[in-house]
Image 1 (cartoon, rainbow, N blue to C red):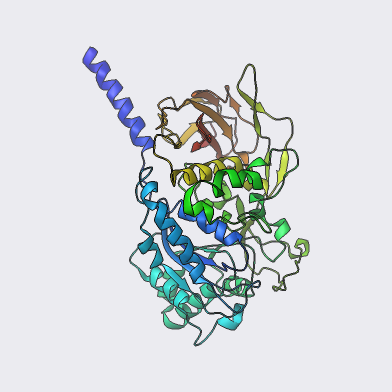
Image 2 (spheres, helix red, strand yellow):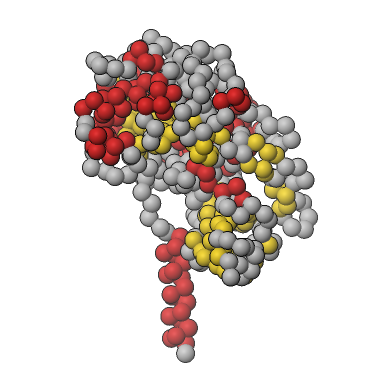
Length: 476
C-alpha cells in the first residue's frame, strides 16, 4: 500500500512539473526604428536589450518616419549595444542566453534615407529590406514579428520585392509568416501595405491620432490610480542611476515614455502573453480583428495620410477593469469600487507588473544573483486547457509554485471576460489562495472562459508571473 501511495505522489509531481515546464519557442523579431527622431526609441531599445535572452532578435533596422524624413541612424543602435556589452556578463549570472554584443551588432541594418513611398518601388531595395526578405526565406516556420516604431517603408519595400520576384505561391508562403505591429502610422506606406497585402497580419491603431491609440496606455497618466511607476523620479531611481552603463544611456522623457515598447511586450513569455491571439490580451494590450469605422477616426497633425481602411485589421479593443487593491486587515486583496473602461486600459492594467520586471532586470546589470530579485515560477497541477460541462464544479491548484529567491509568494485568480466568449461573472472561491474551486456557469451553447492566475513575490521590486487557464464549457 505504501508503494502505491509513493507511486501516486510521484505521478502527481511528474504531471505538475510537466504541465509547468512546457517548452516554448522564442518569438522571432525584427525592429524598424526611426531612432534619433525622438528619445523614446532609445528607451525602448534599452528595455529590449534586457529581454534579448527571451526573444530571438533577428534584425535591428534604422529607418525614417514623418518625424525624420531624410536620414537614418544605425550608429545610435550600435551605441546602445556597446553599452549592453559592458553589462552582458553580469546579466548571464541571472539568466542564460543573453546574446553577445558582437552577435547583436551583426543584426544592425538600415533602410533608405527616404520618406515613405518615396523609398518604395523599383530600385529602392536597401540593406534593411533585403535583410527582411533574407530572414523570411530562412528554413524556419516560426512567425516573424516586424515591430514598426517609425515609418514602415522598409517593410513595404521588402513586400514589393517579394511580390515582384517570387511566384504567387512562394510570396503567399513568405507573407503568411509575417506578424506586424505598427506604432500608429508614421509615414504613408502603412496604409499602402494594408491595402495591397490584404492577408497580412497587422496590428495598428490607424492614422496619426496618437492620443486615442492603445499603445499610449504605457505612458498615460490615469486619474484614479497610482501612476508612480511612470514618473521621472521612479525612472531615475530604478532605471537611470547606479545600474551601470546601459541604465546611464536611458534618456529623460521628452514627449512620452517608451511609446514603442508596447509593440513587443507581448512577445515576452510570462505565462499571460500569447501574441498569436491579440484578442486574448497581454502586456502589449488587447486588440480585435475588425474594419474600423472611418467616420469615428480622428486625424492628427503629422501629415500622414488619413484614409479609410479597406480590410479588417487588429486594432483597438475595450476592457472594463476594476483593480485589485491591498487591504490591511482580513483578506489581503479585494477589488476596488471603481471600474475603468477603454482601449488604453487593456495595456495599463499590467503596467505596474512590467515596470517592476524592467526595474528588476536593470538591477541584474550590476547586482549579484543573491542581491537581486527574480520572478516566481508558476506550477499548475492540471493542464491549462480544460473542458467541463455546464454547471460542473472543478478545482484549480497552484500550490507547487515556487520562488527562486525563497521569497514569500501571493496568489491572485481572476476572470478575463473580454478574452473569452462568456462575459458574465463566474462563481469562484476566495481569489487570493493557492487553490480555488470554480463552478462552471449554466450555458446553452459552447462557451470559453479565461481565468488568469497571477503569482507575485514579496521581493524588491515585487515580480509577477502568470498562467492563463482556458476553460471550455459545454452545454449538458
